[in-house]
Length: 403
Ligand SMILES: *Cc1c(COP(=O)(O)O)cnc(C)c1O
Image (cartoon, rainbow, N blue to C red):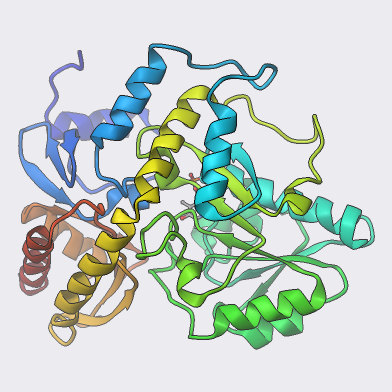
């Protein structure tokens, strides 16, 4: 049993004992269900962030909880030293859902991205014939792909990057959304282009129409892999399984995470071409927990939820409603709204408030979301939210902007 705590005592404990690598809103959550959370004092809030899209199916979706419970009663971990009765069927059905040929399971999103980088480099040397240690990967300005030393090496956000050197070489940065810049950056040593189809942390930045088909063509012409980091944008967040699906473009590798674990445990994967992931031979890459039976159970249940298309449909329809409602706030404290499906970046008018001030005012109205950078709110409600709940939250946002 957890000890009885107040919001104030939770904050004091966190400050005293936890590393200060986050700046949370002052709200202490104790319970949650669906789109709603309850704090230690019994106040209820509508969740308008969904754990940065890790909670696409809401808190404690019954099918996901049941899958984990059932697995806990049978088998938790074998390590990959042995086979188990969950792993292969999960991989088969995840490949089926994503129309890909092979699955590499990991735990966190950053590990999936690291794995994709390793695979792309190995493919460049062993298949494409790039000179040893010369492989380059093209990335975008404003990117967010995780927090490892290699990944922050090519972050241009000083807060994420500075003082973590020496940095990993082999990355070339081009402006996000500029297909000609991608083309110009491709050389004989280019292994891959690694980008988010829509940039999440950057503030839900959608590239111009045609960008992705141009990048796909440039990759095809130059034997370069396209790696789509769909960790935040994928798994129905934008109304399609992948955000790239809106462009009719296929990637060679996709990185998945966040919602793949159903908001219950960390589950990530790289999915894609057999001839690319096939460069990995026994012992060359791995993870003790990657794809372990509990991960496979929850991941498989997530695949089952996505197979019906119900969540993609909800995101499309409710997303249109959300964007219509947010559009009404432009000129009333909001400068711009971007996004797709149930995902929106809301730029606060510089003359109005900071993102933090608006997040605090929203909290006071019973809605939880969080700023990214100074003046942008990132809105990503659980896909189980209703139209009425969206109205409630957008009304609260309108009031928070005026407050
Ligand atoms: C969150 C995120 C990651 C990192 O995932 P972690 O599980 O936090 O390591 C990578 N790429 C994108 C696009 C993300 O949004």
